[in-house]
Amino acid sequence: MFSDIKDLYPDFATWPTVPNGTSRTDNGHPHNWEREALARLILRQQAAVVFEFGTFMGATANYIASIPCVTKVLTLNIPPKERPLLSMRDIDLSYTQNTARDILDGKVTQLWGDSTAFDFVPYAQAVDLAWVMGAHSPEYIASDLRSAFGMLRPGGTVVLHAGDIESLVAARLYQYDLYVIGERMAVVREQTGFRA
Image (cartoon, rainbow, N blue to C red; front, side):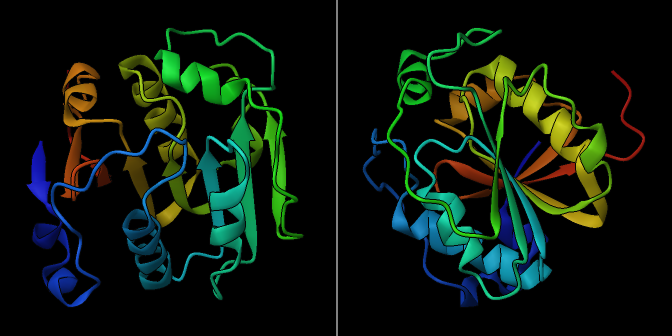
């Protein structure tokens, strides 16, 4: 289930160094090295359309939009003051209640809704890379990954940001191979022929 990113991309060592033991941030934004690793994956994929689960303030969506190959960013968040449909960690819930937003780049489209009930059909096979950075509870991780794979074009990539490895284990992601980057990120691949 868990492998190192170098098992998927042997040349990953030539990419930016990913520090181990980086202190966690609880401000809702990924670390700078995580954003840089995401940018490298987007550039390697030459992803034109990126779908982000979890807008928060819009800073990461704007960062993704600044990557030269990206032409469109779709970013989904629970509307402020709306309650989530599944259980959510308190810290993630606090992020959904934030009403302060960055002004979004013109390449960014804000979508509103709970990802467990959102209609992803219009985005089927329209996404080059899905960045799953929404709620970090096991229930949301499992649901968001299912939705992300349903949107991918052939050859597309899913990149997951999890609060911690324990969340991934609790989500029972046995149908996926996770290629771990640092402490909280992974490129996710569906296992072919998996049966529960």
